[in-house]
Image (cartoon, rainbow over all chains, first blue to last red; front, side):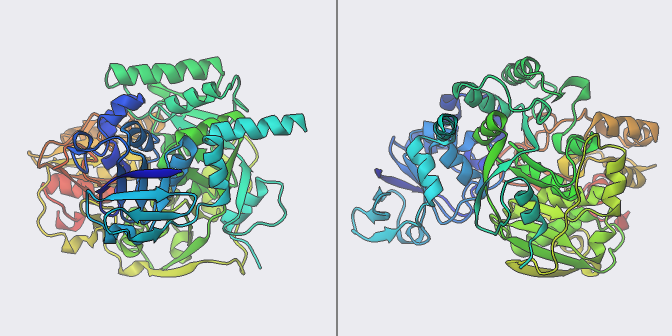
Amino acid sequence: MIFKGKVWKFGDNIDTDAIIPARYLTTSDPLELAAHCMEDADPDFVKKMQAGDIILGGENFGCGSSREHAPIAIKAAGVSCVIAKSFARIFYRNAFNMGLPIFESAELADAIKEGEEVTVDSAKGTIIITDSNKSFTINPIPPFMEELINDGGLMKHIAKTRGKNETK
Amino acid sequence: MGNTITEKILMAHTGLKKISAGQLINARVDIALGNDVTAPIAINEFKKAGGKKVFNKNKVALVLDHFTPNKDINSAQQCKAVREFALQQKITHFYEGGRVGVEHALLPEQGIVLPGDLVIGADSHTCTYGALGAFATGVGSTDLAAAMLTGELWLKVPQSIKFVVYGKLQKWVSGKDLILHIIGRIGVDGALYQAMEFTGETIGKLPMADRFSMANMAIEAGAKNGIFAPDKITADFIKKRAKRKYKFYASDADAVYSDIIEINAAKIEPQVAFPHLPSHVKGISKAGRVKIDQALIGSCTNGRIEDLRIAAGILKNRRAASHVRLIIVPATPEIYKQALKEGLLDIFMKADAIISPPSCGACLGGHMGILAEGERAVATTNRNFVGRMGHTKSEVYLASPAVAAASAVLGKIASPEEL
């Protein structure tokens, strides 16, 4: 997968209340959630961003609640992928399970300015800043997570493996 | 090489004879939990995947506790969708209306989660059940859908950090203060992806209510689970509640830990987590003058009867400061009834408190206790992120029921010693 887009920078410990505040959790409609994506971290984010843009976080991105509404809001807002120094574990699971591409890079966040464009090549495991041509390595995705992505998320993965088990 | 309690419980839920940290496993689930916020997405995914029947109607718990009593039309619709699913699937552990409590207080109280269980819940504070010596972890809605369908879930066996807590607790210091102190020390990602195992002489004497408060906030350090080895105190709690078999596990003496952290509990004073992270912790003596507008006593962290007794002990014959809204949320109907029986609700009402029905509402800024711009609350809850309880320019200070009650009376963050 290749993702090319402008990065929007956020700091460390961006919690799921900032990504999608609880006051909007009375619905699970992706488009309604998307309208409030990142609202408590940057109230203008949805207005400013364009489809294909990339969220760039620091350490522990997505900490706090288990709400899958967080990756759902990000994906439905049109964000192509999230890059962070590290991810909180439930957000990490959720992203792979529901199909939001996420990548870990310890160095990118400190080497790039907001608004710069990058190209993420998941097969090569690289992120390249367009203007400076600087290249960064993505932490390798564990094989099982790769399987989840290739199958189109957890439920499709289960359908596939259950099908296999039943024909055995 | 021995195993930790976490590894042993996980192994017992697979067909494997050996297990080690970092390994990816498919584990059998004893209880899969969802609420009115997370279950609607899970039910939708379950149906989309062609799900007709849940793997076991006795092993799914659906608790409508977040936006209940129904806040608005949208939340009523969400509850309705979960109710219809629960009735159609004949889910044994379905709770709503006058039977509902805050899920992580309700499930242990009703004996639905037991020692040695593997519990997954689409709610991050599912880690609370580690207090019973269960492996319990928060997951997302798709995970819940998968578990409802197959009875299994993929998990990575976590490394464990061992906390050895020793020394006698000072007056007014509780499990809540211990966990706040620990999070302050290791940070909000200090235990990322790991198990937090609580041991030591102080822990051995700690009542269940305090253990629940501590396990509850393991997620606030990024942990996958928090866990206590069950003992006599656990056994006393469980024996009148359990309706099925359970098992006590303990770590081997030669179990492997990624870190061992010793804590001298005798040196800890009541703790307060300042905005906007649970790790911004200070001792109460260093809190300075922080005027408050609201005090909230309740939640899955501190809404148990023991918490209400502590608060009532402080609020008896006193009143909340005139500018403070004191909100008390008994976490379950059973706790509510017990508080009524013991005269605690009477004490609270004489202290000008608002007594809320069991609900998660105020804690997550959902409803029934929202903060306006510039307002400050002291809360016995678990999160103080930006906007957590209302306006993005409001502030939440996390503390114990003792500190919250004293603060309500004095109108500022305060220790009961100041009364």
